[in-house]
Amino acid sequence: LREAIGDALRGDTDSLRRDLRGLGFGGVMLVVGLAIAHSVVWYPAEILNAAAGFIYGFWPAFGLLMLAWLGNGLVCFYAGRHAARPALMRFLGSERFLRYEGVIHGGGATLLLAMRLIPIVPFSLFSYVAGSAHVPVWRFVWTTMIGYIPITALFIYLGSRLEELSPTDPVIWVGAVALVAMLLLTRRVLPRFTSSDSV
Image 1 (cartoon, one colour):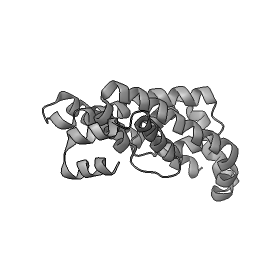
Image 2 (cartoon, one colour):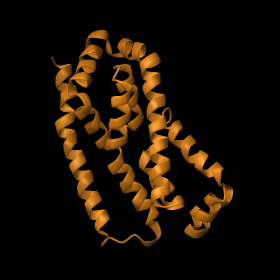
Image 3 (cartoon, helix red, strand yellow):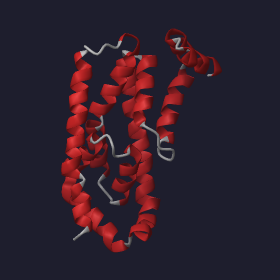
Image 4 (cartoon, rainbow, N blue to C red):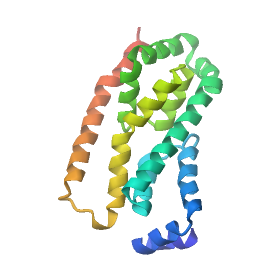
């Protein structure tokens, strides 16, 4: 790891990839561990996605990270269901919390998918909220997997193409348009939370 950090500081991407791949299964477990750690230490998930894409290539990193982020989501979901709900009710007040819960249930799968598509909503935070609101497990799992594909795929791809990335790459432009569209979606989804608070 020390050599890998030195390679990164020198900009020696070939050596960096070799060093991290040299960890073998330990490198895979490091990626999974960093994704699970996101449940308590929030950092931009896109950093891990891009780094894994750079090290392992697009398809291996994509499969690994979709499973790792689902693992993170389930950890937060069950923590929210069994521990965070009473804390949230105390923090927000029972009446307000129940209104938020009603919004999540009323929005159903559409709201869950939209919240995964919005890049400014922390992945782990929404998993805690979904668990505390007693969203059905299967609905949580499939909306997490489907909704998180676009942004995960985009940053893994960018990482996998780091050494030959070009501004003329059409995937960059498609990704940029998709990110803007997802941010605009924020204006349609988040007001449902604020309006529910004013009822």
